[in-house]
Image (cartoon, rainbow, N blue to C red; front, top):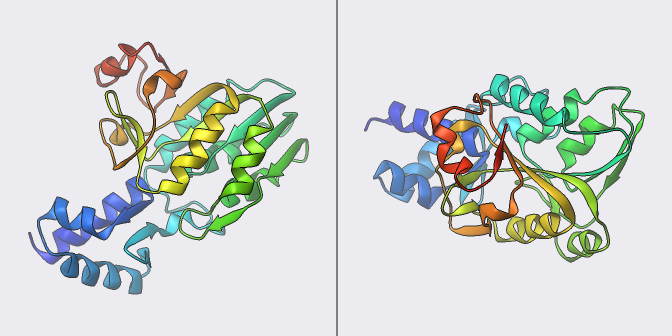
Length: 248
């Protein structure tokens, strides 16, 4: 595989999952970690991604970003539109991080009245534009890579609330392995969010289906609804319907 093909593959992985690790990319592309590190450094210098310790994150994941370069944005907007239809006036809601959830926060109806908790800085910035929504930003340690708050203070807050809906951004989802991620602190955060919620809605573009990472968040039995950009009857969703998940 040539350098251009590697760079294209790296960019696609970063844009799809928002964050990637160098060893994972090296394994997938069958090259050394040093080769991937050099490629990532060049892509960082060119402004295509942001190099972090041990990996890379999408530039579209930055809180000040206008969203124009978010990967598969049209699909994420379609998912967000389906998701916002589930929200009723005066609901209490949890919204996790992730670019699809940023789109959800962006398109919420201006007349919606709700209370929304979020550990995500980009989501909170979008919600600030909705004057009738009470926004409660979860306090704690800010992850500069994921732009979400993690740690003991965040987990403590989630133990004290019970919300109507939780919109959970997903980096990796598989019918057998459930929801997974590469960040242990994010695992603990999302586990606490799930426990604090009456209903959990997972948002995922179809390209993330049947993918997994090293750390498990939960089994699919804890997910009430899966929303993708696909038609709910699409055969790619058959395995998820078989798990008794409501698919939208």
